[in-house]
Image (tube, rainbow, N blue to C red):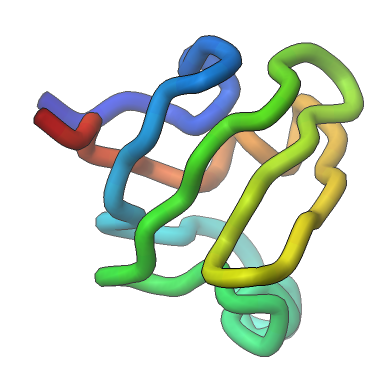
Length: 74
């Protein structure tokens, strides 16, 4: 099941399936590691949301998280 990153709870892990938006924004997210196939863990949900992608921590606003589609890890 795909869901926007904004609906993941703290501690949940998923795989990024799609990043939607303007091409320049999607490209910037890819530079930060937010691209299809990468695993993401939510360290702290809310706005801002604290994420762990690889060895990097990243903070995003809720409206940005709404455009990142994730499949929850089993």
